[in-house]
Image (cartoon, rainbow over all chains, first blue to last red; front, side, top):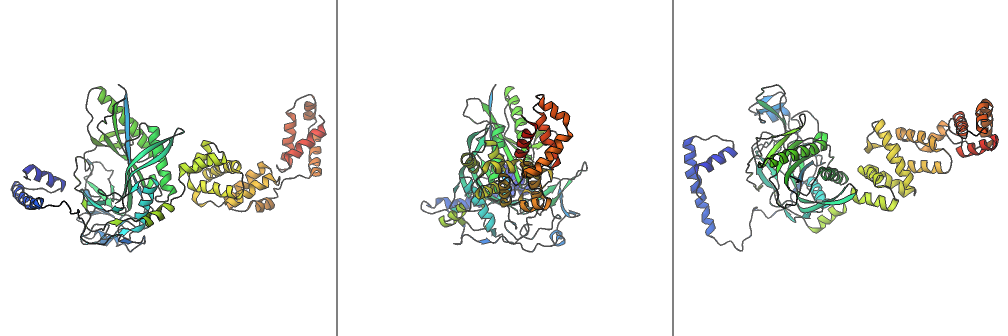
Length: 95
Length: 478
């Protein structure tokens, strides 16, 4: 699959990151290389192989519906880049 | 041009667990912001979510109650989107193997049964709460993560509804099912039950679906109805002008009662779902599923039909009784004790509900017990109290939770059936109202009712009305 500049811009937008022109150029090449490498897998015959999303043979791991100990608000907000009173503060989200 | 409106609903219900979906933080509503949080629900690096079993079982219960096929293998997926109410920048949800698929719900619309198909039922985590400051020009929003990670059930219907009556019934019926199965408290004012509608229009008679518009920010069932009505008009006007309908998400503006185009996260979005590596898949065997099936009570619509057929109640009365599970349970318990369905129905739907409304009582913690109401009905039948006095006793029962016998004795409310005693009162009333006796003798029949009233007044309503009537007729002479 050929990666184009617009694909990079689209992904960057979804991830909310800004890229310079130079970086976009770099990622076009890097991502194309990665994808072509992965495409080698397409040459394998996987007709009788079940898709596998989990590498462990374990299932049904649960906890009971019991209360645990929350952390304090001070601890919760300690590393927040921005806060206001009892809240985390973020850039405005509704236009 | 005539159009057909095609409506589907997405429902989100917060599950009634004590703890969050992947951690032990409380799900309690209305506490101090950012105090029910921990590294897991704040999305700190390196933490491991572990599934709350009760939340999973509640979801299964709802899926079974909605007649879904249950995926024996189910798993969780990451839905990636960047939004500040989502601490991890992805939401743990289900996409590839939803726990319930291809279900349906029967509902009653203006007396006829209509089936709406359910596309899927799945479990996911709730996001935090964003607060938008009211000051104009503010360039920030505030976040409270208490809600982040609360278990959230999503129920997606097929676009099987055609008008707002059907939508209204869908919302009411679904709410009742979730309440009956006790998987959610369904408090819309606290956001634990929310609806999103998708609406498209097509020419009458056409099978082709038009472009659909999703509407969010619907805070009440009333808003859902208003938004659909607004959107149907908006789309039909555009189509009449020959314009195309854009596939988009719109926000309902409750104050101005219009929808506006939303320009944010959901638009032309790529969620890049992939299996959540931190959670293991869940296999559901028949034994587990059978136990879930057994735990589902008789659902509201079946119960209503049973009340109509078995007890010969009206559609309306059966509807009122099954509106709240506690009321229906109360009624069933009464009828089990004493076979007087009509009487119990009247007491519950009229008197009890009036008391609840007037005194602002919580229907889930009533003091009066079915056994006591059954005793009251027996006491009326035996003639111990009149039906008028019974109302007074009933009100006292609702307020205190005391037995009717105790109230009657304590207040001396037992009916007077002693003819001698009643006669004395009648003589007194006759002596005091010579004019009325004259009128009666001249043929004014309703004068008798006045005299009965006077006797009842003298005895504070306790005289047996039949005896009063008989004796009075005898005395005044027919």
